[in-house]
Image (tube, rainbow, N blue to C red):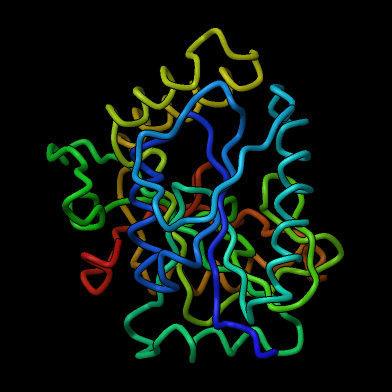
Length: 288
């Protein structure tokens, strides 16, 4: 029996805003009937319309961050590899991550995905979008996110393996694949939006339990909120094309030049802890 083209898979906990955006973004690519959402825990109910989407509730996920990352990597890898039996391509990522094709490539999704080849996976170039100091328009689901938000970091952390076409297992919060070197896509870009709006990020922290969560989650989320404030003092940004060249030369390799198992930080003196500061080019406006 022939496989279908592609599906998209994510997991969520106490999430509405970004989940609704995830559904809109990926349903336009693979169709709503090919979306799969794993709901983490039965102690909450998503507020978004899930009609026509395959959902399941996952019980007993650990509530410490590192253990949760490992648990979810295993659980989601198992589901993705099962879905691969029915689909040529399985897209997997967090609900605040949206992958697009760089318009410069001039490709559609079926053609762009052919670059997976025999290896069966690829890493999208990651952009960690931030709420810039002069960006006063709140994010709104009825409008694109990229446009009101123009700044971010070209980040090793969010350069992620977002799709598979052969057996693979994710690890470490889905930032790498087990026993696979980094293999950069020529045209896929991943926009990570968790820090793209002060109010959305704060509301998300509260919805997840605020300071009542395990301290490992509280620390991670408050550190990320602090990073939004830090974005106001980024200073000069790199030309996008120059930053991309640096990323492709450095992210996939360890310091000795050997292939890396996960993207490595840039050694460029202009790089900050979050990555290479950039302004998102006009050609990406409205794609997310």
